Image (cartoon, rainbow, N blue to C red; front, side, top):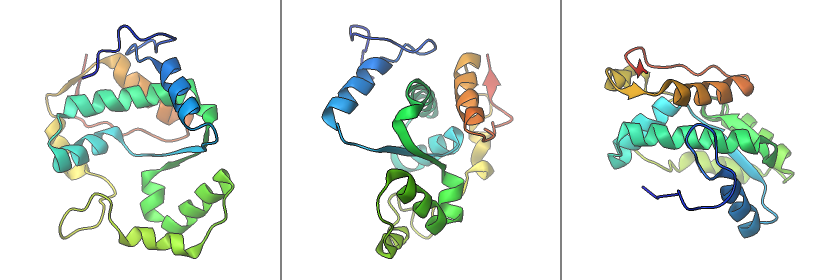
Length: 170
């Protein structure tokens, strides 16, 4: 994990992530960029990441908390924020929404992207969620303020963040 202690600029209240520097570097590196993101339940992200890379669930959740802080700090920088559920449930409609928000012309050739699974698991398409495996969080501890950052972000976007029942919040 990167030691960010000596980096300059404003930090987030909860994790101390150097959010100002993050956005400075991003904006200077990509001055004409249009930022968009697809939000997926962080607990599903953690299980998916573990499935593909064997990353630790706690580390992936911390990354999700930090991304929520990045999003909170400069939500205005995003031209589009869509849910993963919407993306896989209505691929064309969600892609059209993204294209409109980013001010680029929708082209039906974009629809071929759904045929190319970017994180393939042999024998299946992307799963809408991993709730059938949420028992992996039984007994896993998460800080209350970390969970609150994620919940606040989801609530601010009009979405509900579902949380595994066996997760320990301290």
